[in-house]
Image 1: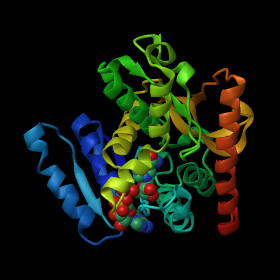
Image 2: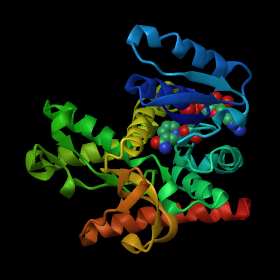
Image 3: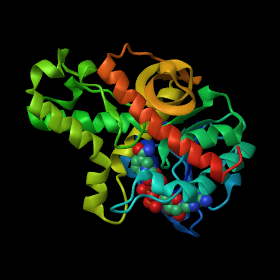
Image 4: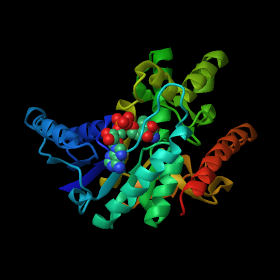
Length: 311
Ligand code: TXD
């Protein structure tokens, strides 16, 4: 059985374990600093396995040693947003937590692939790659699957069409400057721009951009977790099953889309070698302008990180 370790057993970490256990993909380890909490959640989930008929081992721990020989490490440890906060407000607190999680886990699992979820997402993925010194195929950040799924859900709500028929692509940084690509999005092959009147499409794009904040404002004590963790599980499955799945993820840019030395949300292919390929869309001038604006915002957070941490 493969092994996946999830660092941070809070809302997204524990729910990622839940989605993964349903898929019977790998044995699972939950690590958290809170005494007893990861152990309690892991045992409770393990006790659900006879009911759902899945043979998965689930262990909780406060020490990184429990993650030994993991195939995939998923980093969710860190603070979530509260109402009124931007993702960037989390930078200094989460940089310390993610930096430690990355270097400690690598000691026990030198061959693992990393999926990063902690915010500010693009910058935490960058930190993970720099701290571990891993090649870029081994570190990927989750944002685009979630942002695209939000847009797909809103289109389904608007049209009454099955979510399975709806393909949307939201690229760029995981912030309010994200780039929903309406030209590339479609319902059963029909371009979204033909299917929906411009004002409805614009409303969906705006709601997508603010989708994370909408949930934060409703929950008040934390941020979204069901959809983000479903996205992490999909990424882990694509890697472990060598699916060659093309999904939007945060990947290290080495000249693609004219971007260098930064993580950014682009379509990537996920397979047994992790982030195997970056797919480059042809962007028109308007899309390129949105891309550049989003990239500038992400770059600024990367620069702020470099002032806090030596990389
Ligand atoms: O799409 C995305 N990328 C995101 C990102 C979608 C949703 C949430 N996103 C971010 O993930 C969010 O802004 C946070 O930065 C992280 C985790 O969110 P979550 O909702 O899971 O936060 P919780 O419930 O507070 O859980 C975080 C856990 C908590 O149990 C802490 O005790 C633990 O992290 N924690 C640690 N675990 C291990 N090691 C260390 N050092 C540590 N510090 C805190």
